[in-house]
Image 1 (tube, helix red, strand yellow):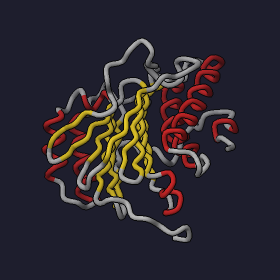
Image 2 (spheres, rainbow, N blue to C red):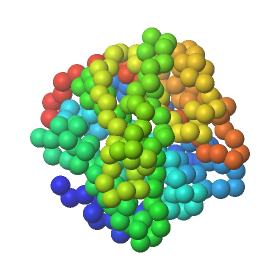
Image 3 (cartoon, helix red, strand yellow):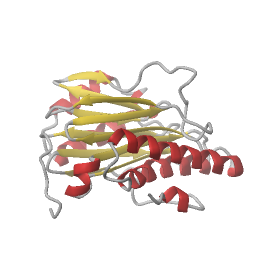
Length: 263
């Protein structure tokens, strides 16, 4: 596998995967809805980034649907670039892993390579570190990893279920790129039609209660525009002029079906 990280010399100044400031994105797929919004603090760089992709049928069969969210730690360009690079290139490199690798194996190889690159680059350029979480939906299973303080929750039957966030120990990395080797939290669970995964940064989940997120998401009907509106309303209600806030929602509509390679 040729890694994008191996080829990268300078982090990107901007990327099309990151939503524009104060602009919501959302689209409906056959098996899920994806919607999200990221708002930066007034007059400053937005340290938050998220990305999500549903690949073509054959790649999705092997790799699934991938979403990431990140919150750069340093309040400067390095922190912004660390979060953007992590959110986008984790997805790029994950989808480029061999078909023979399991989801867990692919995640481990990619997150390890990404952490090593950030750590080594940061040693020269200055602290390219970020909180980071990712979600892979693959054949009825959700695979979740955490490094740091981004949050993933699951809304099922109107109830909030925290996932992938056991208490941190001294062996867990507090962020991506902060150490030469990362020890992340991993969890997998079976998904059900109607599940909504809620990915957010501290600027969101410290200002909006889980019960309010459950209430508004449960009221949204199963279509892309309504879930997009809900994500935007929730994120804007959390936004403060001094803190970045990001929210990404992924709703499972039905179990994935088998596909043909030519589809």
